[in-house]
Amino acid sequence: MKHFLQFKDLNREEFEYLFSRASWIKKAHKQQQQYKPLENRTFAMIFDKNSTRTRLSFEAGMQQLGGAAIYLANRDTQFGRGEPVEDAARVISSMVDLVMIRTHEHKIIECFADYSSVPVINGLTDANHPCQIMSDIFTYVENRGSITGKTIAWIGDANNMCSTWLQAAKLFDFTVNVSSPPGYDIESVGAEKYDCKYYKKFACPYDAVKNADLVTTDVWTSMGFEKEIEARKKDFAGFCVNTEMMAGAKNDALFMHCLPAHRGEEVSADVIDGPQSVVWQEAENRLHTQKALMEYLLLGKKE
Ligand code: CP
Ligand code: NVA
Image (cartoon, rainbow, N blue to C red; front, side, top):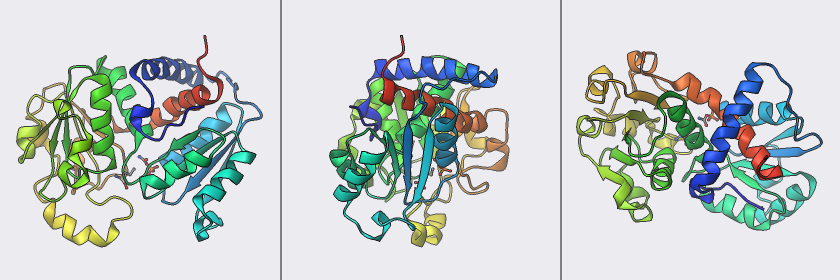
């Protein structure tokens, strides 16, 4: 039994397999072909933070594969009222075939997985967002081919998205140029966890984007950090990905953002809505890549 709690829980060969499955599943979906390998399977989705894309892509994806998805908001569950994670994991996993969790501290999902009798997927924690990076790399490959050897510029908060890019860089052998304001950089999230061979730090975001193949950013204030919104707006001034900044990257560089975005803060409207942006394809690919992931975790590789 496999869990997907961090990006590095799967190896490169498994991701290559998932990408080829996701391409097939996407094509079949576009042609309105029914493909229901997960009939009679049940999927519990536990949310302790808001979501649009993650909930919809998993719920629609499981339905399209023939199974049923159950949405559990923590505000309604006993888990949300403090029932021990170990107890919740034993009970929930005894009734369903697969579980997804979006929560705060990463150790919650690790504890849940330790006591779960079925595979557990990370739908975002404070530390990781592996499903999003799976979709982002798939989107890069769809547009430009292999990501190996490329340069990705991460501009802004060294948050859950940034740390997952750093894990992916080691697996796929690419470089992440990270530029964050002081206090929000990879030191503050434990730079020692990442292999320094795969990232470079830049004080100035304009230096980080030089010759990048992909420029990407995220909100300045992630879920759970709302009290810091006003302080962060000041601290992140100068870290908006705008057309001037994009001009420093390669001419054919792509722009990605996991969404939701704040136009005028971390990205200007003309970049996110401009020709280099692939954010809508990136969001849609959550559906196709996660369908491939659910199929793989439940049925293994299809020959
Ligand atoms: N990108 C992402 O995970 O979006 P949601 O928060 O809407 O799920
Ligand atoms: N870093 C953001 C990603 C949202 C999808 C957050 O954690 O809120």
